[in-house]
Length: 288
Ligand code: FAD
Image (cartoon, rainbow, N blue to C red; front, side):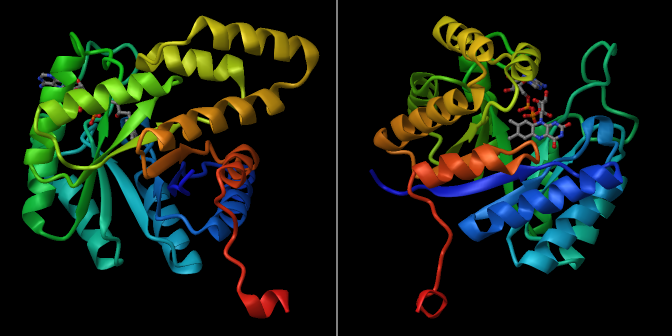
């Protein structure tokens, strides 16, 4: 099996304890030499400054390529362009450009006055600056606001045509789900890389809630397996086995890049990477 290129998603800390967890996560995973890492932008644009701080600190202290997430929520075009400009000045070259979700209870996404009306507009405008490598989100299972996969594929094509260079998918649990989506994208003329997003299962109850909110389906066999593993107190082993198997099936199907949603908990992601043959780069002088 070929060794994949990997990348990791982190979220910005909002408390002292969370800061320690993020730095521990980066410290554990940075030696695996990721192709890039990314830092999320809190729902509703709530972590604007914290995201910036985490992005620049990881970039400057660990020498990693960091992609900053940016959403259209609760900001005008000018405000978003000012954030992007600050990133460019700090040497950040990669942006994950998203529309974002409406705040809970709101009736779908509505742009603020003077704000971007869609992810496509955001991508187009960031691309016009000529300063960024732009990545976007993609949905192997229909996005909750989409009628079907065909609509998601068509929308993704428009985001790529607007200037995005690659897409990272929402998480899913069966390799076939990704392959079907990849085939549909290829048929639609999308030739940009589509990187599978992998969710190591740190808490089955938490992941099930998350999946229900974002349209990821839960296979019955997986739910059964976790119900038994929770009863027997061996969820860590099951999580490692299930996610490694998913990644390995994806690699066998020609996937070269994997993006891990770490949730700032490094152990499971590290173990899965090790099982896939991604190990810390050790120089010979350190061994001798
Ligand atoms: P889009 O691609 O713009 O829309 C999603 C789907 O909705 C489209 O495929 C299309 O089918 C339909 N759609 C949307 N607008 C239209 C339209 N005008 N006309 C027709 N169809 C339309 N959220 C955060 O708040 N912060 C983050 O940091 C963050 N990071 C993410 C990273 C990744 C890799 C992914 C996959 C998601 C992330 N999200 C994040 C969640 C994301 O904001 C939500 O899924 C949001 O609902 C969609 O954002 P998008 O840019 O992917 O949407």
